[in-house]
Length: 71
Image (cartoon, rainbow, N blue to C red):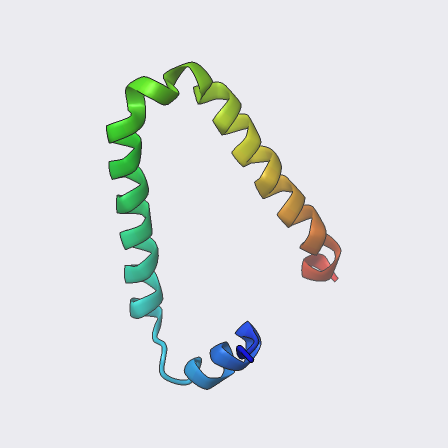
């Protein structure tokens, strides 16, 4: 049976540095930008829809933790 994600994170979190996390995020951003550049002509008609959907998803996540953050 597979381990839960929390077990994996607990095992690794002592070794992970902020530099590692930042490098991982930068790598994902670069991959996303590259994929966006390759697919730009195809997704252009849906650009505003994608931006709006991303904004809604972000707001939903922020709303989930809003009270806990400001408590």
